[in-house]
Image 1 (cartoon, helix red, strand yellow):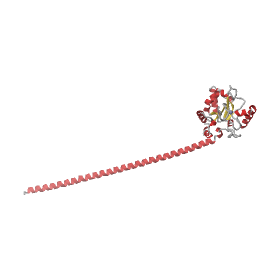
Image 2: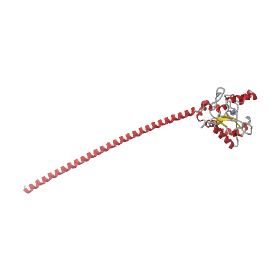
Image 3: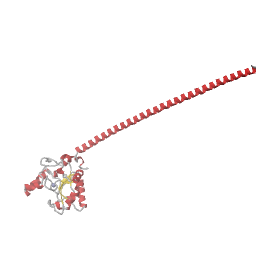
Length: 292
Ligand SMILES: [Zn+2]
């Protein structure tokens, strides 16, 4: 074999070996690079997953916090409501304790006013509305503004009313009954004048109306326009007819009107009921707001 050929062969082998080594190194390098990239990718994936998990956890915690806050707010609101309710109840009870419970009582042969009962405060009725000008008529002070509005309205509507009687003490009622008994006899007097203690007049919230035209006559009152006006409008001012026509309780008294407050008067008007037909417990619900 010529020398040059041997040298060429060795060179070729050396070159091949080097090439193989280089390819090997290159292969290893790129293999290890891919592995690294894969690992990094894996790590990134893991980190991302971890982040997602943390986010979900944080969201859950947040939802939990929001829920707890809501719960706490609701509890606070409920507490505030309870406080308001208690305050309201205390207010109502306080108002009720200051309201005269006699004002909405039904009077009968078994339940009547104490002979010493006198309304806490009485006001003189404006003389221009008093039928007998030389008399001083008094009314419960809290009822007077309502009565004044009613009287003012009857003037405007052309059926002016006058007052022939209002507050009467136990003694006055007793005296009145005796005089009626003497004049008309006990049987007749019983038909239109209550015994002392049974009279709503002692409350100071009740009035007897008349008009100039009928000259104070009781029997003619039911024929007047003023009476018809009262039937349509008195409830707006809190007044009711205590003893309407055909009531099973007492003699029909078209002139005799009692203040019971606008709420109760409106209920009675709308439902076509009479005060003495209602149950006392039903009536008592209106006591606290009688002067509203
Ligand atoms: Zn009367």
